[in-house]
Image (cartoon, rainbow, N blue to C red; front, side):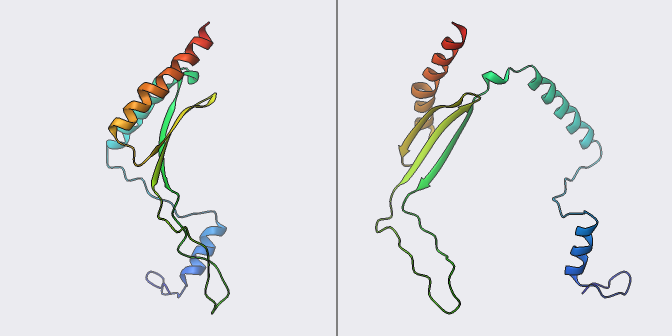
Length: 143
């Protein structure tokens, strides 16, 4: 119950329902102190102006993701009072990393590695897989 300012007792759930009805939602705040907001807005404008000059056909986004195929869920749903039983892999499995590059044309180049991705793996991906694909694509477009 909340009665700090007015002395009227109102539950939190009632307050949330009222705020929802008047279309006010809970959001993360952006804290800005003094001239910092002006500096930030100038930086954002300069970045936006710079992006306007970039041909979107030349943008390539590279991402890395890891997965362990031996993982299993720890929780499940079941009837109250009954145990949830499920299958789980016998072996723990190894970590697998997947690197990929995406452009407007779709997936350009991908590579799968057993284990984690480090500097050497990433450099190998860029030099031996990504750059040759970019070179091939640029030659197809130009001539």
